[in-house]
Length: 537
Image (tube, rainbow, N blue to C red; front, side):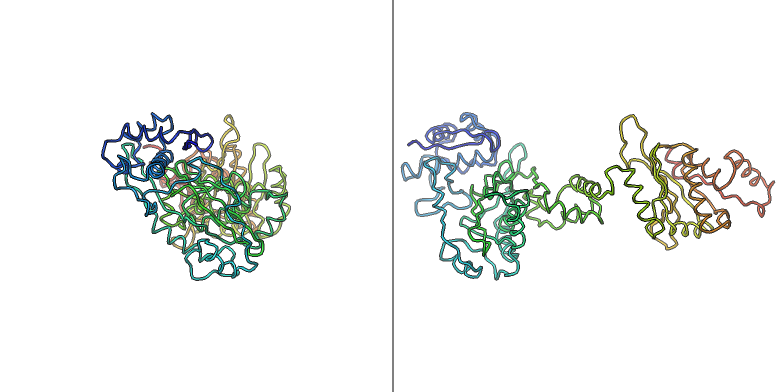
C-alpha cells in the first residue's frame, strides 16, 4: 500500500493527499545537493518552501510545511534505514528519538490503516482519586509534576501550576522570520497521556441537562476548555463534537481528546496530538463567552465598566500566554459591552422601555433611591435628581460656581434622520479639594430647544422650592456655561427671572457704575473661556 500524506486546503475543512515518493521527488528538485533539509526553516514562507508547495499544489502554510518535513523524515527512515542524499547527519538515527526540533510523525499525517478505538485503553479506573493517582505510574499515564492535589478541588490547581512551569520553560518565540516579517510562537506538549479532575458540582449540573450521550447547552465546553488550559495554556480550543477539540489558530496542528472513564473519581484523561504548538504572532484567538461564563461576566459588569474589566483580565494573563496569542481569559471590550447591554436588558421591569421607566418611578417613590423624576414620551427624555442632590445644590450655590453644560456621543441616535441625544447636567464643585465634581441634576433628551431646557431647569427649581421653601429663591453666586444661546437664555429666564437681553443691559449698567452694587441681586452669568478659545481656534 502506497503511503500518502494529507494537507489542509481551506483551514481544517478540506484536505488533499500526496504520495510520499512524489513529495520526496519535489524536495530533491529544489534542494541544494549535500545540504541538510533542516537548513530550510519551515517558518520561511518564500524561496524553497514556496517552490515545493507550488509544485505539490498545496497551500504554503506553516502546518503544511511541517507535514512535508515529517513525511520526508518518515519515508527516508522506513524505506532505506539510512540517511538520504539530503539528510546527511542532521537527523536522528534509529537509536535516537525525535525531539523538539524535529516533531514526531503523526498517524493522522501518514494514512496507513485506521487505528482501533480500543487501543487507547479501557482499563477500569479505581473508585477513589488517591488510588487513581497511585495507579497512573503503572498504567503508563503521564502524571503532572506537582507536590499534591487537593481532594476538595477537582480542578487540581497545583497540577496546573506545575504544568504551566514546564510549558513556560519549553515555550519560545521563534525569531526566524521571512521577508514578510512573520514570526511564530512554538512550545512543546506532553507526549504521554495526562489528566485533570472535573469539579463534582459542575459534573452533576451537566448530568442534569444530558440527552443520551450528549450534554445540552454549551457549558460543557467551558468546563473541558478550562481543564485543558491547566495543561496547555497556549492553545485556544474549539470543539467539533464533545470531548474532541482542535486549536483554533490557523497554523497550529494541535488536537486533543478528553475522556472521563469513571464518574467517582471524575478523572479526565487528556491526549494531545499533532506535534508542537505553532502560532503566528500576528494572530489572536479567544473562545466565545458562553453559558455560565457569560453570566459571571455580566455580574462583574454591574459594578465595572467593560474597559476596566478588560484591562484587569488582560493583566492577569501570564506573559508567555500573551506571547502565544491566546486571549481566552480576556474577552474584548466590544464583547463585554454586548454582555453588559444584554444583562441590563434582561433586568428591565418591562420589555417596553417607557413602561419599564414608569415602574421604576412607582417602585422607588418616596425612598432614598427616588432619582428618576420625570419621563417625557415625545420627544423622548428623562430628568434625574434626588432629595440629596437638591440639598447639595442648595448649600453649594450660595458660595461657589454652578456649572451647566451638555455633551453628546453618549447615547446612540435611534435612526439617521433623528436628532442626537444630549445629556444636560447641573454640576457643583466638591467642597473637598481634589475630589470629583458633584452632578446634582441630569436631563437626557433629543429636543435641544430653549423651551425644553427651560422646562428642565424650572422643574428642578420647583422641587427645590418645595424642599426648602422660598429661601431657595436666593440667588446663586455664579453660573458658568459654554456660551450656547439655548443654555444662556434658559438660565436667564429660570434663575435671573428676566430675558437674556434685559440681563445683558443690567450687566452693562452695573459695569458703567450706574447701578449700586449693594442692590444688585442677580446671578453672574459667565461664559466659559475654554469653550470660547476652542471655538475660535
